[in-house]
Amino acid sequence: ITSGGAKGAGGIELAGAIDWATESASCGLEALGFDAADCKQALRDVNGDEDAATRLLAARLARSDGSTLNGAELQMAAEERSDEVEALKAIFGDAAVGSTKGAVEISLDSADALGLRPPARKVPSTLTLFVDEKDAYPVRGRPKLLFRNALLPPGVLRDVQRRLAAHV
Image 1 (cartoon, rainbow, N blue to C red):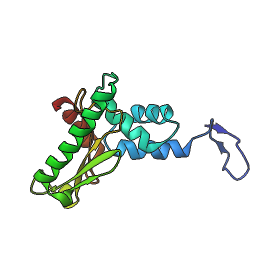
Image 2: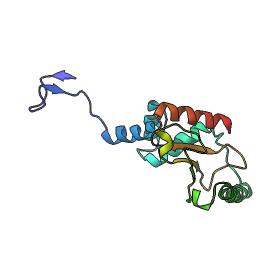
Image 3: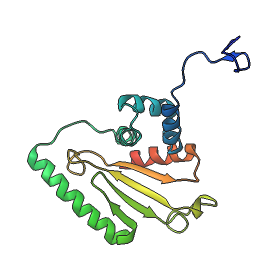
Image 4: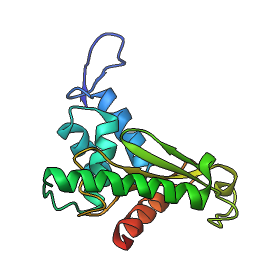
């Protein structure tokens, strides 16, 4: 900050420009429990795409080995992921499991199943499994998971994300 800035700025001028889009996206990722520096780096790595940054951060937690699969392994992984979605639906119920091309999202009962305390128990929690057609999971590699609950503080979510990554 320097003094004697632009007219109407109260004599204060900010040194350097702030990229508000990146800062806002970073705050959103930090609210999911990721470290601030990691969020900003992930956003830089994917040119500001918040969805891609979320997937990248989840992949880094999963400590993906980066190995590639051949065609037969990719087909087997896709079939096993499809079987896994069906198993999740059998466990949690069809209504609790949503599947898109890039992710499987499971709605969890914050109060009964997770035993969360108020106020976090009053909002739904979700567990998202990120996948894509080139993903090694479950043939090789770990799942890329993200736990969400809008009322848990980022520090608690960060701990949950780390524990999930260590557990799988």
